[in-house]
Image 1: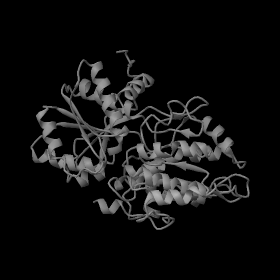
Image 2: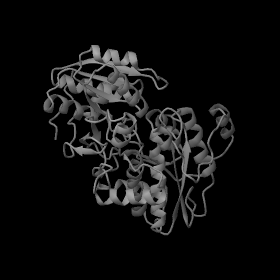
Image 3: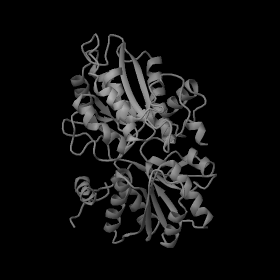
Length: 428
């Protein structure tokens, strides 16, 4: 095989919805019926600026998030994005325009994402999309959004479909899962001395990216995955999964799971008295939440981080926590909520750079001008042929009480990502 490596250069609390603009939930109406309804709609007409979603005093931005369903804890991402734009509006908006933000619940079901996005485009007339959660959900609407010339910034997923190959209307800011896997494996082997590594992963594009990345990274060290255990989204009993992990003799387990499944598997292995070192994807980086859900068992878990820690004294993180406390005092200002702020930062910077003469083309040009832009994540750079804004992360570890401490500085995996993508595609 070709070398693809170079040198390493309380569930109810978070499933609440906020007070405003939550209309448009699908309820009991099936996605099929909604799609049939929307199929007869033409796209929303341009507003008085001549640009869909832009008026003299507003810009319509939208997203979806699993506010309900098996991944409802990630719904905080969408609510965080809404709070971020509320904060921007408090500060006067962007070039005299206020942001009208639309957040729809897709319950982590791609068919509902399709219906929600069609409604946003054809009825609500969104100008751009940011922070849409989920690999399968984003894949379900990516072509439709591009066909309708809707700019998509920061899909909330580390899959590689958004930027490889580059797509005109899509700007990725989430570090790829393939890179996460490389860094986590290197740390487990080189720094912790682990030699028997297992992985538990969601059985779809999301989890398979972690699996393939981990396997390729282990091969570099002359090792292999000792056990790979897959989880389906509806699964609620993971006892057999826990037994397989224990029987593998793994001294380290990597995970690409929803918070719900991560909580369940932690309970299952705990009951077996099995205590491997856990190293997990950034999708599980909300250390305070995971510590609470696992009743303290999350202590010691090492995770990939793609933004400032929620307890950081970084000036923007402090500002965002204060905004969240002011605007939504019942929300936990953890990683998931603050991620919604972070994913929206490149879009706002692009809107500012585009100026008052805002069109799809001026926004694209403005985003392509980002060169080392820094918000609360790693530096982001785009260009005409570059749509993956960053590949950097750092590692952190959950400590007693649920806060986290950094273990490394910003690092990259050194993987030849295009070669890794080819391997991933061959195995799908």
